[in-house]
Image 1 (cartoon, rainbow, N blue to C red):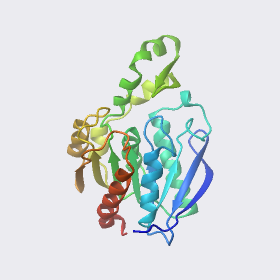
Image 2 (image 1 turned 180 degrees about the vertical axis):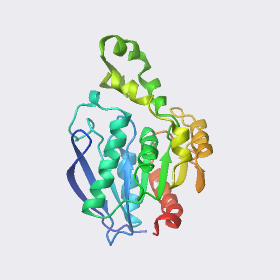
Image 3 (image 1 turned 45 degrees about the horizontal axis):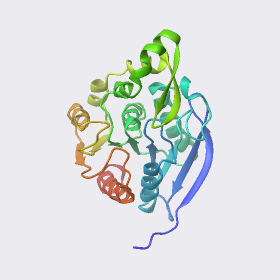
Length: 257
C-alpha cells in the first residue's frame, strides 16, 4: 500500500531544566488524536524506534510528538544533572506544550525506561486516556543495573563516567537518589488511563517478568501483548509498523480515533 507524505515540524520547547528539541510528526490529513513518544534510556528522538513508530502512527492519523530528554540528542542541558524525576517533568512539559499549542495529548507511548517514566507522567496529566509501554522495566531502579559499575565512585566522589552502548555519560548522586523516590505499585494502582503492556519475551535487557509486574499492578482496563521475535531496541522496520497498527486499533476504544 502506498504511503502518503507526512509532515515533520521541528522546534524547541521549554522543559524542566532546559530547552528540549522536538519533532511533531503530522499525518497527511487532519489528526484524529495527539500522542507523545518517549525514547529509551540514553537514546533520542532520532533513534530508529522513535522515528519509525511515530511515522507509522502519523500515517494512521495520530500526530506524534517525539523529543529529546534533557541532556540528550539536540536538547539543551547537561545529562549529569538529569534523572528519572527530570525525565517525568520533561514528559509533562511536552504534554503541556501540545495542550497549549495544538491539542491536548490523549495517548503516551514509552520505550524501555521511557515507558516507566510515561506511566508516572500519565498519572499526573489527567487528559491522558491511554498509555503504552514497550519493553519497559517495572521499577525505575532497574536502570541502576546499567551503571552499577560506577555507583561506588559516584557515592564517593559525587560523579563518575560510565560507558553505555559505547558512549560516555557522566552520572551523579542525584541519578541514584531519584530512583528511590517512586512506588510504582501505588502509581499503577491509581492509574486512570487504559494500559497496553507490550514486551518482547526474549528481551535480554529488561526481562519480561517486568511486563507481568506492570500488568498485575495496574487496574483495568489493561491489555498485554507479546512482541514475539523482537529485540529490546525494536530494531526491525517491520516492528514499527506492527506496533503502530496494534496501538491504533487498541487505543481507538479510549481516545476516539
